[in-house]
Image (spheres, rainbow, N blue to C red):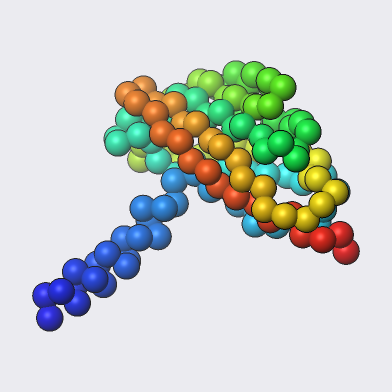
Length: 133
């Protein structure tokens, strides 16, 4: 009985443990201009988030970030960064950009670096590019 209680508790906690930085949209047709919303669910071990850097997959040529009050944006050749905040650990927020999706279908994996007042974390949310409709 005790082991089944532990298993149930672990299964219930698993979705929360993996919901760190995610992309709200799950897919879009190849070749489309797409809004991507990166959701930041918490800070780093209780520490507030002070920066987010999204590194683009090779197949995505560039991104146009949406301005965010209280955050400075830096656009690099292969990345977009927001610095500012801070975003407290107990709150969530969204960081938005527009991208041109590749002409070929396939999974696109982004690398996201979350910088916090104490520490940092790295995440790899994915997005499916579907065949053109």
